[in-house]
Image (cartoon, rainbow, N blue to C red; front, side, top):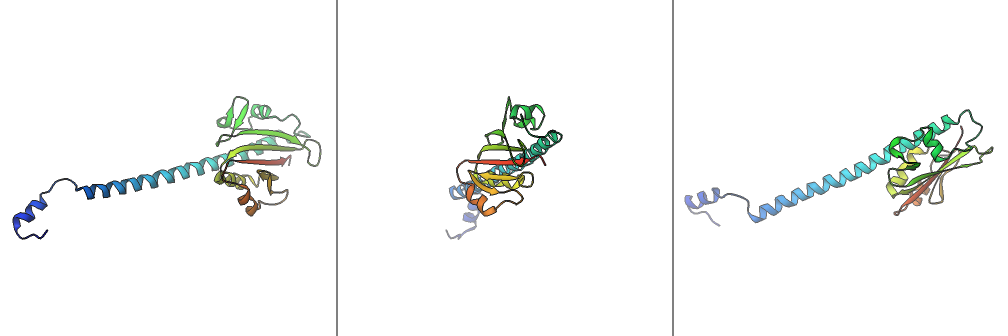
Length: 183
């Protein structure tokens, strides 16, 4: 519209409210900001849970070793016994079970490494791909071996094989099994 008179210019400058196009533009910006904020928040909370869980499990491994330091073996160290010894934080304990931050119940088994019942093996199901790789990386220096979905990703005396870890942590739910000795 060509402004030919001062009166026409005055009518446009006195217009109140948004045009439909301006309202749609503002709405799109607001939706984009909301999407960005929620996806980054969800990634951040998952990452924080993964970090917390890695720290908690590494500490539980350390407390288990400490509680059995004067014993010859891990004989009798079931999940209820480990709960009773205060190995796991209260936030992970549900009755007589231990639950990971991602929903899987932790199970424990005792096996023989170099002498009878000197190895503790924990199995934790229910990890998505990102959490699976993150937990394996956070606990690697505290445990002897790690396998994911039956694939060995860390052997005794070595660090994680990141290529094997990447391939083993699938898009479904993953199960992590790790073991540690008395020392």
